[in-house]
Image (tube, rainbow, N blue to C red; front, side, top):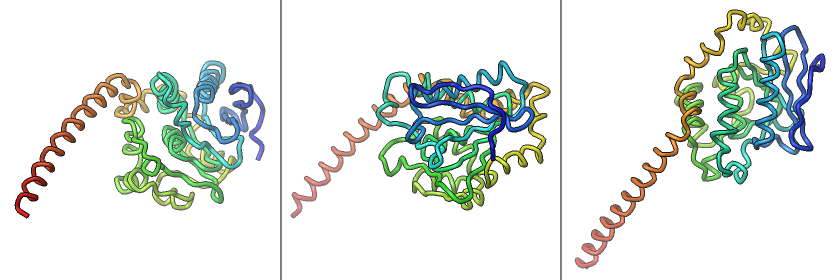
Length: 268
């Protein structure tokens, strides 16, 4: 199905783009393509944020759908090396996530292919998620990569998933096909753009921003995650303190084990 009337395009670096179109009155599709797999790097995040700014400023408020121009991937998540650049989390990724989470219009992630790790978290920042019924997996693979989750990452999953599914995603790295993701309420429906438009019509979503309170309602709904997104400096200090505490505990544990080993050896 066509994404509708073209509105504007925002470049992503030199090879990618965000195409914004309107398939129905006050319905906007933000379709991003940054080959090969829509990694969440700085220029990608900033291009999407700019597209959202343009929509909010220049167009009647309605509903925003995000999706991918790349058939296989909604997104393949973070580029871990790029993510280690100073300020990336607080000034780029968290800024985009906060923007989506409390955006003053209903938002829907149309997940057309794989959504791994940071991509799934990005989709979870949306109000709703509709997924391709025949392609793609959703998963959090940090446990397999040996990468810890930061507070906003855990928070959004904790707030939007059941405790059992939160555990399966985070501690097991379980992959969910679309049907299973729907069963566990990770997503809200199956289909493509046609099904998303029906979903919007059934819930009368285009009229929801009319009173101007959608963003504030979301901010209160997701207060915990918003707080983490806005206060990464505070969380960094807490992480440093926790690291120091764990190091001290490790040293003390080694002393206890050494003392026990020496005592056990003396009895042999």
